[in-house]
Image (cartoon, rainbow, N blue to C red):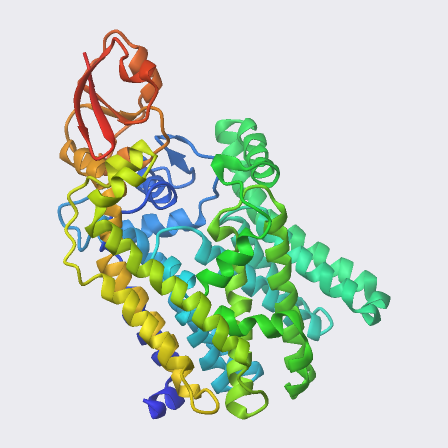
Length: 552
């Protein structure tokens, strides 16, 4: 193995990434909203033949640009999704682009670490990213952020390269291209993160102030080129649908920054906790170099020290920015994962080389956070296998209904969390100093535990939350009927019913006295009585928290 690592490092990380990220992509349905939202937009691209526009419910969807959705549409076509000759499931095809992006991220981190530090540092960086929980989960998902994060990171990295060469044109152009692609992936936040990182670096280095004009010129040219990507696409869309779509897009971006959109208002420290728990175990030892520059004395070259400064700034810019905005969702701080994994690798690298020692509070952090996390991993299947005992303790009527779903638990699922707890205890149990190999075993255990949990437990969780309605939608595929949700937002009925064209929404259909085909309505069991007892519909059934109605 060590010889293979030495001679074929890129092939090693490609194979390892494929083995870890790809196998269980289709083990559960896509999750509402984000996963289903993007997959449905890709399906509608294929169905309508309009690959320029992003649509949802066959109407213009202005919240997201098209790059990731193009990749999903390409994946659907490659695997033959929505045809009788499909190679694999729709879920697998929708998540496959992110698996490739995850592999590309591992290769990128290895390359940069090996180039500027050493091959060992490159391996530790890729290994740290692979072992963290949320980056692993997202690389097996169907949402935009892994691509968005990689593009922003590459934009920052090539800006650094350009800065080292007195803002050389080639690297500056590459940086602009990556940020332009990031703008086409998720929008102007990419340019904001990139620009703030550069500005903070400049402000913190007084010796750079004499080069103000060089900085302004470089940042201006990158911004102009990057914005051209974004403006070109939105300009074409505006010509097609009207300029109102642009004002709607920017109004949406402002709403996310200034309000707790869609119920996602959280406290200021929300993202710090998300990173601490979500990037376990590497978050425990990566904290120290993120808040202190003392370890940089161990770095041999100015280039190494400068990279460390840039990546620290990138981490804090993202964390502070998204701690300040009102809307807080887990993946908003996901750009922090790459610099966080860098500092994890830095600690492990210094530790292996004898430049630093294992600190006691690392062990305390591993025990406290790790055992709590292990407890949660075991608690979820325990609640699932004893759901009827927990229902009386829950006040939410809809969740009570969800827990009545007939999901089979063998009882062994609880052992996944217990196994992780044992791995944590083993890693910190010591006679003298903590052994580096034990920490590596813990990181390997983290990878295995995530894979097992996603294969065994996550599909069962999905069985409670949405499998009931998805089964209903799939049973109506190909039938000339309407299926709409009322009282809650969902995209699942569009994708899993494989809706063929635009139609009135649920609220509009509900008010119609007559409809031209059978019409089904899905509501949650906590919906207002005015909806539930509407004179135009008749009750069909209640199942696992969902109410099913048919138009009279």
